[in-house]
Amino acid sequence: MNGEKYKVEVKSLKKSMKVNPDLLEDVKGLSPKLLGRMKKEAVECPVKKTMISFLECFTCANFITRVKGVVYCKGEPF
Image (tube, rainbow, N blue to C red):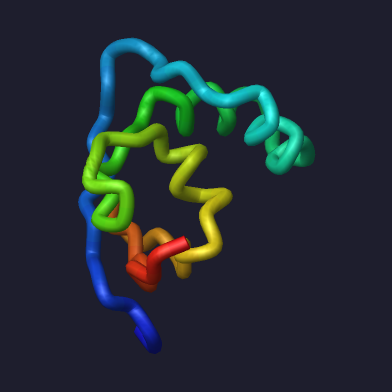
């Protein structure tokens, strides 16, 4: 992959994380089933240095791609 600084593993959660409603507007075209699954996933964000919802990661400008449970991240500060 080009430009990735971090490879971050996606973790599955038993319960959904709270997600900012503005993020849901950004992913409006995704199926409800896929959204439900994404809400139950989290990553240890290398930029924010905290656990965040995968949906938040997915809408981030640093997100490059996700392959087999690993997120490729640019890792640039906002």
